[in-house]
Image (cartoon, rainbow, N blue to C red; front, top):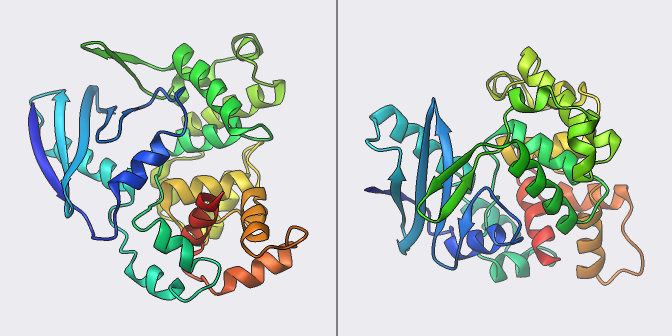
Length: 295
């Protein structure tokens, strides 16, 4: 085993991150308990299993348990993945300062101090997960994801644990209704996930390409794929790239959170939500995150 540390801001809570990662017992892409998170990622052709815990407030401990010896470029990629996954590069001090006296978000940031956007560094995973979750409840979405990953993802066994990798665009691009309908995917979702995979394979979409272009252009590029609407594009850009303006304005959860917190009789209109979010310019994604957390 190889161990090393990654420094973290004071405004980072491993406990809050773990709470998020424990949302469903059907999650196959990581293992989590109250103190540890473990996961497999693929760097080149090598599968690397790592564990995370936080013994000191200013650092994360990383234990690499499979894929050794770890070469320096591989270690650098692993660190980058962890930083993207837990959004460790973002300094939340300015956000907390901005909302500390805010009636809506001030109490939430105090209550959930250190909570960060748990990202999806893999853009393909981010888009497919958003499509899987369309128009169904979260737990059924996790059921579909579990079946999808078990059927088409790569397995990696270490001791008594079976780790899974999310299915690749190559694996998904050739799937048809006969593969996905038995998993309880709707016909529409079958079509959408395959079209997303084909967009990646053809080179139309890639994380590297979208990194190079402005937010609005990146959103339009994603929305050129059938099945990727405004909400899905915003969700993926928020979870993979952390564009602050990539917040799903029409999100039902955001509207319900505002209604609850403001004790409104009816849900706010889109115009009301826009006005509220003007105060959080530059931090819209984090405002969304804390509103979701309030639910």
